[in-house]
Amino acid sequence: MDGYALNDIPRSGVENMALDQRLLEVAAAEQCVLLRVYRWSEPTLSLGYFQPYVQRLTHSHSSDLPVVRRATGGGAIVHHYDWTYCIALPEQLSIGNATPRSGVNLGASQPLYDCLHDSVIEWLSTRGITARKWTNDCSVDSPSQPVAKQHRFLCFERRSCGDIVVGDHKVMGSAQRRGRGALLQHGSLLLATSPYAPSLQGLSPTTDLTCQSLLGRFDSPDGSWENLAASFFDHLCHTLSAATGVDLRRVAAIDQTPCPWHWPVSTQFADPQWTHRV
Image (cartoon, rainbow, N blue to C red; front, side, top):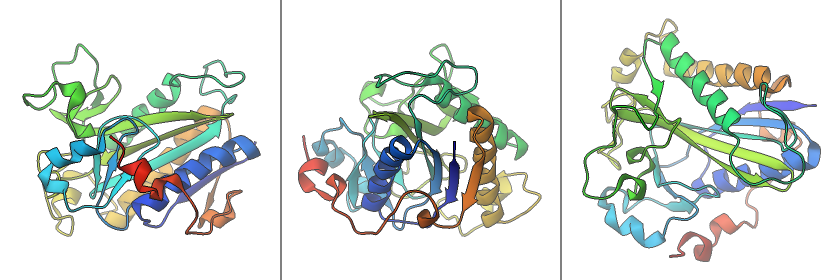
């Protein structure tokens, strides 16, 4: 089975979500494994699949941001100071020692969650940051708010088993969607506080990633932002290859994968009726 890994260019919210969807379809059609790590060309708010659009009115800090709706569930994410990843793989491919599924099945693939989140915790530890997965019996709780935590607007103010926390702060969450014959998982590692989501700290409380405060949080022998991002990408590549038994070939552009991509395309993610539904 073929596998491809791309450290992608920044794209708009609509294009990022449309491309994730396309990778899900290609994984099923071509029976291949795809990994994409990406950024956002401008600060963007993504709503969870089931999240009513009207809820964004409750969060004034992100009110001026463009909005896109994800194909996966969960709370809203302010994509500003984060690294986002997407994995698409065939339904019947096993992860680690897990038994592969047959046919189209609903429900989450816990082995893929665990594999990726354990890997990120390991990568953070190599950079001098102690992280762990949240469980229901953890002492860590969501920030104090009068709204039940499962209904809070922002994803990073919620907690689900397996989320990555550093101290009292959630720094990574992931979500999945199954298509016909394939599985999509994407998630975000929150690097620092954004002025569009000032209640969230992530890995660093800085609001200016041009300064050295976040790099200073990392024990970084390579000492540059670009090298840190490349190290994160390489670590995910090694993790997914080991978990699936598929060698991932690193490519420089999306057109070097089996996914032909010519933007713009007709997509539901650009449809106001899809994004604004209540």
